[in-house]
Image (tube, one colour):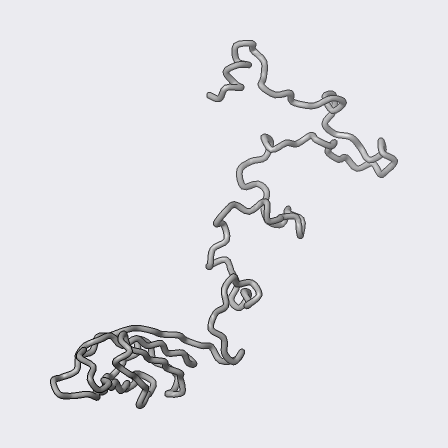
Amino acid sequence: MNKARRITRGRGRRPYRRYLGRLKTSAFRTGVDRGGTDESELADATIGAAHLRHRSVRSEAIEDYSVYSIHLSPESITSSKIASQSVDLEHLSFNPVQGMPDRPLMQQFGNMPFMFPEGVDAMEIAVSLEAPYSDGNYVMVVSCSDPGFQAGVRARNELQAMVGITRTEGNPLAAGWLSWIAIGGK
């Protein structure tokens, strides 16, 4: 039982008045009273929220452009409620990878360890892509964890790229990490 009911229960009164002011005697008034036709209408402020049944107001009863952002609860709009192609670049707070408007892009990245065998100063590593590109015309940038190594893309296809790594003369290191990023059409 809420506090308002408890307070009024002891006095034997209802916690609210059924009708306010001049509407106390009649909930209906006719259009004739206001100079109109003889159609019966509900008087202003006759029906309140307490009189409505749960789910009795449907979308047809809501006037167009009457719901504003203040009426939405936080996190009420999820990705399932957003129409496809409705969010453009001007709506984003970050700058995504951009390409040609009619060709969707995919970005992949990763890193992998490498180790030179004894007496070898050049080697090739195959970088496998997690998702295939539409063709071999994607851009791939590679770098190594130490400036004593140099890396470059030798060949690429839809599923993988071959990266060549060379060790500079006099470099005592034999192992390092290869980092890569690839961007291209899906």
